[in-house]
Length: 215
Image 1 (cartoon, rainbow, N blue to C red):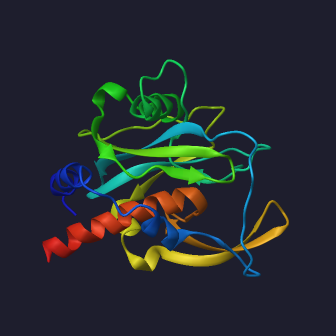
Image 2: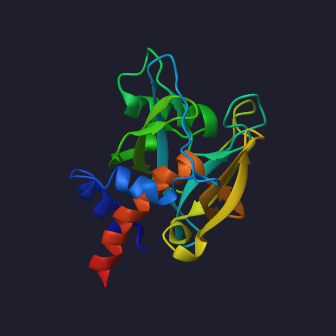
């Protein structure tokens, strides 16, 4: 996949209507017993932004994913896109995504060219409404994990993300009590599931359009 052709396609395509919920459903975990999984929160969702940042490395288009450290929250130890909640100093959620990426993986926001965003996504487990922002950097990036918020960083290959052979399924015990059947992306020997997989699923569906046009 050619870096310039893919990113130019995305910059134009993201201005149009997006697949949204239909694409998210493709990677949605479901309860193993067939019943619905639901969490009711007493407050409105908090706004947040995450960054899908494309760069070239080792002959492939890549993007960073972080592993959260072990903590008491619902996303303990999970793989995620760099990002977090909107703060008062953020002008919008694009600013949020860039600020959080700088804090978590050391990205110089001045070097990031924004291509657009995917559909907003509601994360039921943590009660966040997330805007996935897509950007690119021309030069190879050396990412530095924040000592408190990031356990490790992987550089996922976009070619693997869009390859059906890297889309798999397994049973996962959530919160030590709820067994879920979880579709996931197997990227750099890491399991990408849940909200992050559902967000990336929309990107995959959009890039299928690119691949079909390129045939």
